[in-house]
Image 1 (cartoon, one colour):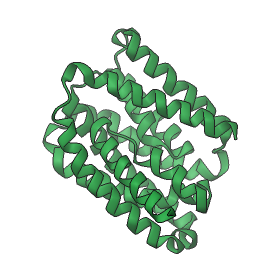
Image 2 (cartoon, rainbow, N blue to C red):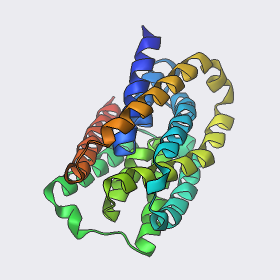
Image 3 (cartoon, rainbow, N blue to C red):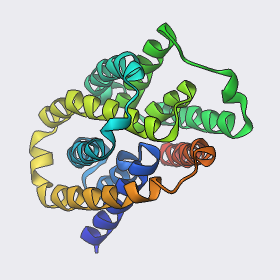
Image 4 (cartoon, rainbow, N blue to C red):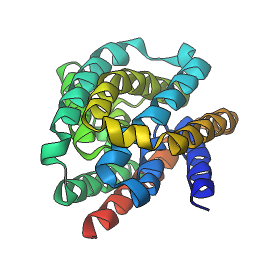
Length: 241
């Protein structure tokens, strides 16, 4: 039963990430944490996350906004590595609650139109990338926080997902060795579940790409905002227990 739950969560996570640019860590980490604990789950999920992100990148790489990638992306990767190194010392429920509130605020801003007044350009894009990387690394949930920051760049649908995916791939490459080194034995012990999760994420990614093609541009940012609000509420709930 538990293996089936992991497989279903992985398929849903891969599909969600193909549509909104994040979701693999958000859905899979709580499921694996049921058996392994949160810190080990964060390290274990980095493997299917990397594989799923690589597959998604191969499907949509032609739509990357290179200007955003080389500004926001580079600092996000550096911040993600820093956050991963600090995760064991500073991560905790209080931090998760703060970031949950932040995601809800970003979602409300997008749904109400407030975000149209905000735009990250020049140095602001570099700072937003660095902060989202550090904060995401600390709570083990970089995709949602990165997408929240990318909303301020007002990218079109395919460019948003492609750029978020490219940045995510770079962040994964920076953080996975850190997570694996700190939790190596525990991660190796979970290899059957990691294999199931990886296969499920790939399947979901391929299916989710088909869904993305049918989402109108006018709806896309609203859908991302709703997903961010759901993630923020989930983080607040987990922080309360």
